[in-house]
Amino acid sequence: MDFKEFYQQVLKIKNLPLPGEDSHHKMSPAMRAQWLKSNEIRKMNPKRAGVMALFYPDLDFDTKLLLILRKTYNGVHSNQIGFPGGKVEPQDNGLLETALRETHEEVGVPPDAVEVVKELSEVYIPPSNFMVSPFIGIYQNPQPFSLQETEVEDLVEVYLRDFLDKTNHIEENLTTSYAKNINVPAYKLNGYTVWGATAMMMSEIKELLEQVL
Image 1: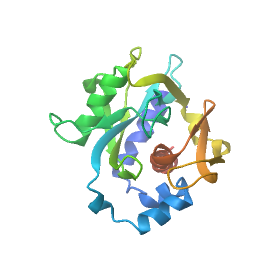
Image 2: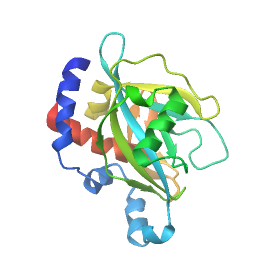
Image 3: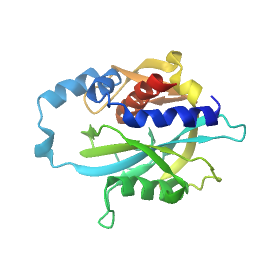
């Protein structure tokens, strides 16, 4: 989709209500819903994080969405696909500042170059005990990305048309923190399986976009 047309339309979602958990459940393993029913998140005292769903034009002014492949490390999100972002630091003045700061650190996008369109519904991630607040941002005049070598293995630059293509919505047999060898809803994008919290956030973004595009 032409980025200029996308930009004009995406601003309309500012006034739309958030689909919230209804959209999250569409991309959530069944075991996750059962786990949430039997556990009170507030008692978990979750850590907070902010992430940025960044849309931008490529050289042909086609619209893309930025995802990243995280480095392999000894942790629950090792080698997974996600949005740029990370945990709140003491100096951050709110979750938006966290998302912008982390996006700058991880992929080199200056905070003042991002036009923030909307804050999305928060998502709880049981394996790492994080409550994540996603934001939709527009990067109108992108410069070459600069990867944080300690955190980011690679960029996953997804065309908007592929993200919205229903044939890229799949189920895959995976082992999760809830169970082994279960069918999990996911997106197949650029050869990667995108599932879990990132897919849940993307489901809400997709529902919002489908109302205005």
